[in-house]
Image (cartoon, rainbow over all chains, first blue to last red; front, top):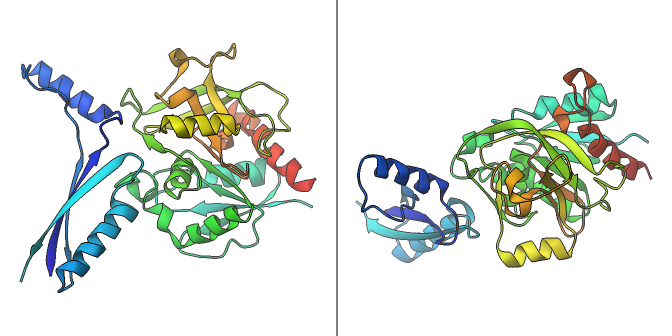
Length: 83
Length: 231
């Protein structure tokens, strides 16, 4: 079995109003060095497959079909074997 | 022959009854609810994907509803030329399903916006609009994620093919950024697919049908669909 960790990021050109709003909070707190805040998603799940190759294939397909929207997001993932 | 509307009910839909009420009780057409777990469109002639918060808007708006069993039938129906209208969350589902291009982002203001707006009827040739004589419609919007986004190439394609059905407008018909309620590109409020049989729109025509509620411009869109169906 593999534990998958997926990070979904908004494409650089796509506006991130949430990141912008959070950065306003940073300014209010005096974190004036904080710039270019972008908020994404972190998703983890297990894949019940023994082959790393197959697990990777499944995770990639899952990311492409559901977890991310290719028009506005990129994804990256990592796999860790768990017993 | 009266057309039959099919109103899809997803978990979290909350304008399904409004849509059903508007087409059946106010306008007198045949209508039926379609459950998201079914495949059968029950011989509907026109499919409505209603507003709401299907699957709690989790992950991305419309992203999970798009894989409901009923959506396979709706996609098939649309690809064969069937008439589909997605309103608000229904529009978001159509985008996720790939029946319409682009994505929906959070409103630029980060606020949920609920108010009446003016819509310029930008395309007067579609089956959803060609029976509308008015240039402007007054219809409510109610959404937190109606900020339509598409890249330049897609926007150009929408414009070149006359796929932009409605734009947010002032009472004078101006469609500049100052009267844009959510930040959507080119003030887009509703778009059509290439073949013109699928419409997605953020404003709620079904909430502007019953005269008791004060506004009735929404019925013009529904009547346009029906008149085209009958002819």
